[in-house]
Image 1 (cartoon, helix red, strand yellow):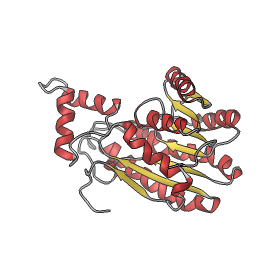
Image 2 (tube, helix red, strand yellow):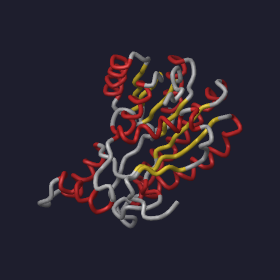
Image 3 (tube, helix red, strand yellow):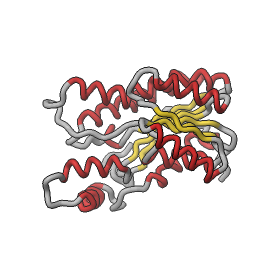
Image 4 (cartoon, helix red, strand yellow):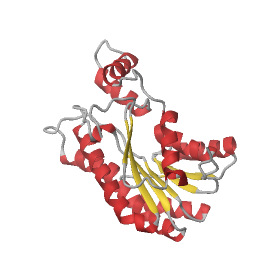
Amino acid sequence: MDLQLMGKSAIVTGGTVGIGLAVARAFAREGVSTAICGRDGARAVREAAAMERDFGVLSIGIEADVSRPGSAERCAAAAVARFGGIDILINNAGMGSSETVMEAPDDRWQYYWDLHVMGAVRFARAVVPSMRKRGGGAIVNTASICAKQPLGYEPIYNTTKAALVMFGKCLANELIADNIRVNTVNPGLVLTPDWRKTAGLLTQGTATTVDQYLDKIARDNAPIGRFASPEEIAGLYLFLCSPRASYCVGSVYYIDGGWLKTVE
């Protein structure tokens, strides 16, 4: 299927690893000029150079801490200067957590709020003017199945991802008149470095290995019995950003191997 993405331009936050990198490379494969934004600027530049080499499409890497004010405007300005405008935004930056509600201090709550919610708010404000000039665009936010079905050890992550889902719905209603479609993806178990980091924390000092822990998580929770690869997830993002998904507006899409235990 031709997704009709050739010649478009995109920004992917959290684009140096995991789902973000898989999405960025999938865009490049479809002929989309892509800006990768990540905290590790050197890695962002390396991955962008690899995309140019592998797919022959213009790509740039930008150092950006999405939790900090000013990063969105700087990334958007760099992308507009290089590509001439922005058609697609993937608000993907984020990471898991581990805490209890009673013990987590205010600054931990604030950090994840800035990372998961305000980062998406600021990037939307920064890129929408360019999308309006180009006659429309698409925004996809990466939330999580935990926004609907929380994990007990990460209440801050659960809460901020749920807020991101609501933000996506509100933004979709506000922007559809400008032909800008906003949707949210709620992934389930995706084997990213962040999952391995979390597993390492939870198994520290025990006889259980990281791989054993992750295998048990998959078998206990997902009917499919395994984690997804980031590349398996990326195809949904491409579809939602393409003209083929022209009637997809303000919705939440689960891609979770059957993990969600309710009917949506």
